[in-house]
Length: 112
Image (cartoon, rainbow, N blue to C red; front, side, top):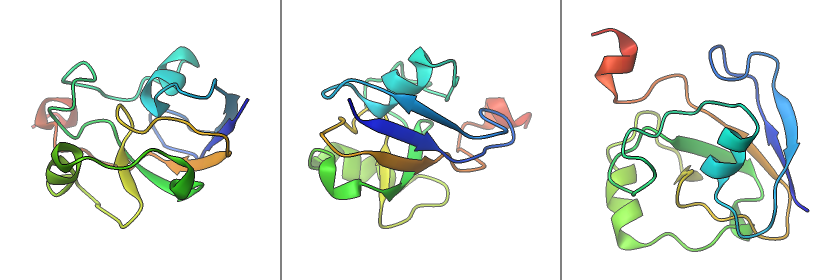
């Protein structure tokens, strides 16, 4: 079973954590199942960018990005070459290291 190393995030995972998740599960579902309450404003329907993560290791083991995810990622805060929407990033065989960006474009959660 692949492991996901979640780097420290001040709100969702202050200490960082290592979790295990089954192959074929989305990164978002794996995080939520392990009490890491990552935002997912569109309820994982690939309609927003609030579940954006940066994959620091293991990016190539994830399924391909489709056009819809790629278009949405263009609007994500802190976009990097290894960014993915965690609701669309399906675990393969390899372990991952992910970072949850400090901000999202979800203004409601940022108290604006």
